[in-house]
Length: 113
Length: 112
Image 1 (cartoon, rainbow over the protein chains, first blue to last red):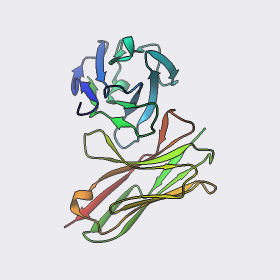
Image 2 (image 1 turned 90 degrees about the vertical axis):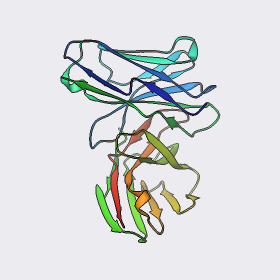
Image 3 (image 1 turned 90 degrees about the horizontal axis):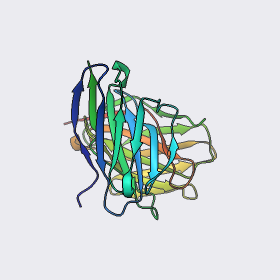
Image 4 (image 1 turned 180 degrees about the vertical axis):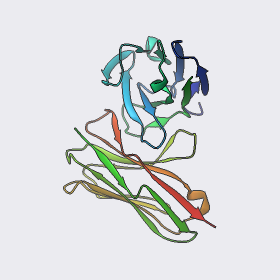
């Protein structure tokens, strides 16, 4: 396994449409995180999972956002009724529970027009 | 609420110079601190991780120090190279396995 994989890498959507991003973490990594990053800023935490359980959600994650991790493997982040303010890079990361080293994917760029 | 600040926001140096990037955080009760590198349009790569009980970590030309009581960390890059050009991000975690709080980063350009 070469690392955390995210799909799609780029998405352009019209305002009001729904979008879904997928993240495949490194095999056997039990913790999975979603972050959002806008230009010129550091990543901001959105949510994280330990196995299939969603343990924490940021206040940034409005009702239009939902994340799942069925069976504790891959994860999806869905944004409903997209707004221009949702335009950002969505980063997924994973860690193995016994270590602190975190591995990030290449990110999924979202542009809402 | 933990806040992380990085200074300077941008830095341009000639090749071969030694340089220091600064990171400060408001709540000293951290679990660990990490430094990351991010190339344009890419994800983050972990460079160094310092546990709260440690004072510094070294990897090759990189050395990171941590002064938890004063809420500061520095990343020292020796003999900088053009390939070091990237954004460097500092992040802290408040407990094991928990979320990271990031600074806005320092954009480094090393001129050949």
